[in-house]
Length: 71
Image (cartoon, rainbow, N blue to C red; front, side, top):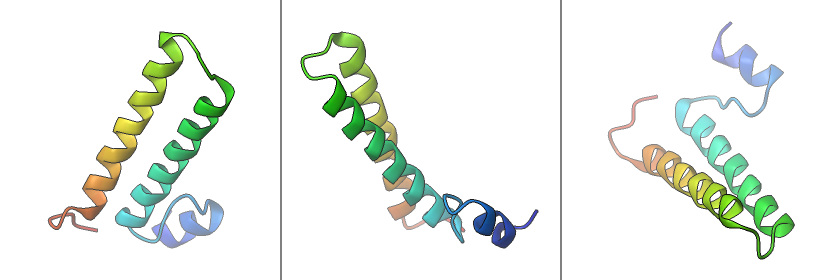
């Protein structure tokens, strides 16, 4: 399956690698907001998950903005 067909079947798959990584970072950001909204004053598990997802999202955004990234 080529990328164009995959993109049409699932918009989360971007037209190139950078767009796909941006989509994944946006999805992770949404999960972080959901965790923060649903688990106010939560135990350590919720906080650890929240920070882990934020770190992964930041790493994805770094990769997309890094100048040596090849599509």
